[in-house]
Length: 325
Image 1 (cartoon, rainbow, N blue to C red):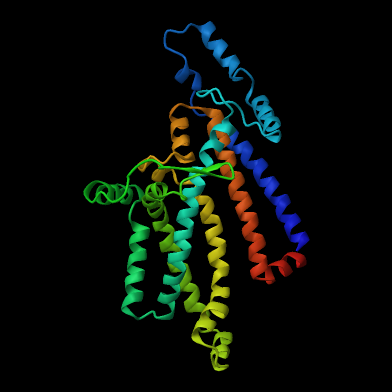
Image 2: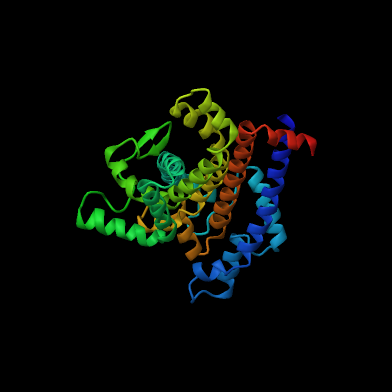
């Protein structure tokens, strides 16, 4: 197990270094932030002064070396627009995005797994066919359109839920969260459901496919032959085996929820990282863009590492294959 974790750590560090180079070079060859920040009437001396103050007068490889040196010390650069640490600006938005992503992931697990297992155990029932038809809709409908429909129906026409903002927050271990207040929950519900729809549909199909595969295995038949209750067979023998692919996909999809919540945050004016990156791209705020992308890369790498470790705990064959290799 120790060898498995060490190998994964080395691979993760290599991935972060490679991605840091790709992200930095890719962002720095797009556009000229000086054109966005300096007025058209500015002379060449003023332009050169701004370029030097932002460190853009150095070759890209020197800028990259400075970026890596600062990143090791926790400094990902200073925002051109806000004049503050890019990492600080992003960290201020992280709790809102994490709260939204965790709420969506919780909905996907709580709704998707039971519905998928039910559809797998009773594939020919009306309920199963209805669930699978609903999952197809969840895959097909565009997120931005569903969000707009939610706002029009539940906020404008019915007036049940607010359409924008985060609502009231309270401090939990020094972090502002909204799910502990009634107003915050009402603001969280619509964007969380909107973000979770695709994931719920995906989990339903994964759980159903896993159930249909596992339910015919010999150990399930043997458990039933021993006289175990149907509840115990499903919860103990079936669930443990179908959770391996579900955990793997959900772990990676959680990173996707954080990284790709841009549309939902924009539609519902949710003050998270997604809205920040859209604003930063429009203003060519390179340090914030690079810092955001590096944080997303780091999140994906950490989640992937945790999924690998959890996968090896659920399936010992993974550890054995690593040792043999």
